[in-house]
Each structure stands twice: as structure tokens, then as C-alpha cells.
Length: 159
Image (cartoon, rainbow, N blue to C red):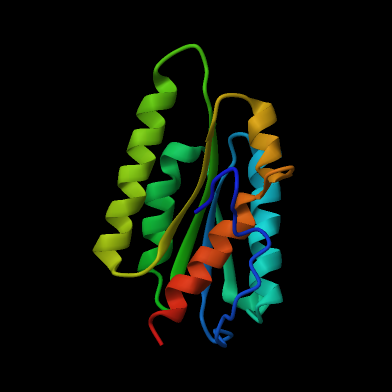
């Protein structure tokens, strides 16, 4: 979705009218000081692009590992057109980081394919909290914004 030189936080391209579409957002509670701004950014982008608040469904899960199952639950709901997964994994002293990042990326991919609908990977995988804050509304934009733009762009391809 982004690099140091380019990100979608300031996307200004054309998005067709998707106001009848329903978006699920699953948010990890772990690292809430990071995931909440990601959620706020995603919702702001959806609202800006004409998605009614009533068409945005939020569900929380305890941590990033649980995002895949939370995404599956939302994808199974009748009428949900896309799911945005928001989480944050910060490198610690053990390999736990690697296992969580690997599992959630595979899990989210599998939900995409199983339900044939956009399930967006909005998970920060950073070396430290500073990097996470920089990507949750800081100097590198808001990856929640980018996840929402990605969901909109993917759904736009279905019309």
C-alpha cells in the first residue's frame, strides 16, 4: 500500500459512488493507542467518500492474531461488502512478533479468498512504538486511511 516515498493517506483519485455498500472494520484492542487512531482514520475516509455511518460496522478483537477470525465473522454477515482489519504488532525481544505477523497475514489472505470479497490488511508491523505512532496519524500518514482507500478501490472494481 505504501512506502517511505508514497502513501494513500492523501489519495485524491476518483472513487465511484459506493454509498450503498457496507464496510466491516475489525479492530485489535492490543496496542489500542495505535489501533484507535487507525480506526478513526479509516472511518473518516469512508465518511468522506459518502459511506453512511450506518453502513460501517465495527467489531473488536483482543489482539492482532484474532483479526482473521473477526474478519471472517464480518465477511459472513449478510450484506457486508468489504472488511478492513486494523492492528499493530511491535517487535519485542522474542520471535513472537514473527509468528503473529505471519499468522495474521496468511489468515487475512485466506478470508479474502474464501469469501471473494476485499479483506484489507491494515496491520502495522513495526520495530517500536515510535514507528507505529508515525503511521497512525503521524509523519508517515495514517495507515487506517490507506486501508479504507484500498477497500474503496477494491470495491470500485466490482461495479
